[in-house]
Length: 195
Image 1 (cartoon, rainbow, N blue to C red):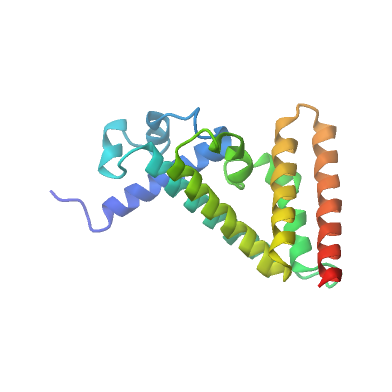
Image 2: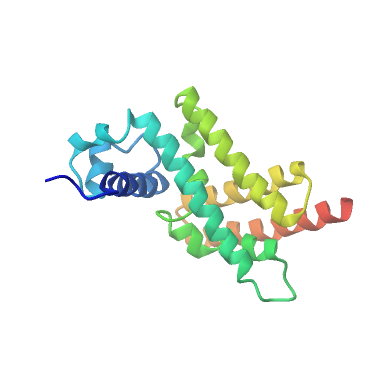
C-alpha cells in the first residue's frame, strides 16, 4: 500500500525539526544521525531517502532554525504594545532574556553552533554565512539602521547569549544578559543618532 500524498515531505519535516532541536541544544559535531532520526521517531536507515549526507542536513536545519527564529522575533515585534519601547527594543529584551537563554532547543541556533562552524565543511560555512546575513538583515531592517550597526548589534546579541548559556554561575549569566541588553540598546541609540 503506497504512503498517502505528502508523506515523504512530512517525514522530511520531522527530521529537520529533530535536527534543528538537537543542533540548537548540543551543537553539530556531537550529534549523530541515529540520534536525530530517533528524535524524529524514525530509524537511522531511512535518513538517506531524504538527505544525501549530514552536511546537507546541517545546511537545511540551519535554514529552518533561522527562519523559525526570525518568525519568532517578528511575532515579538508585531505584538509589541508599549509606546515607551521600540519594536527592536522588544526584540532585544526577548532575545537577551532568561527564557530565550534557557530554551535552547527552540532558541536561536547561532549561539549554539558559532564556535564550531569554522571547523566544518566549506558548504556548511557558506550556508551559515547566508543565515547569519538573513538575521542581520532582519534586525537592520527592523531598526532602520545601517548594516555595520546591524553587524555589531547581532554580534553582541549572539555573543551575549552564548556566554550566558556557557557559564555555570546563574547570577553571572543573568548579569551578562542584563549588560547585553543595556549595551545593545545603547548601540541602537548611537546608530539612530548618527543617521
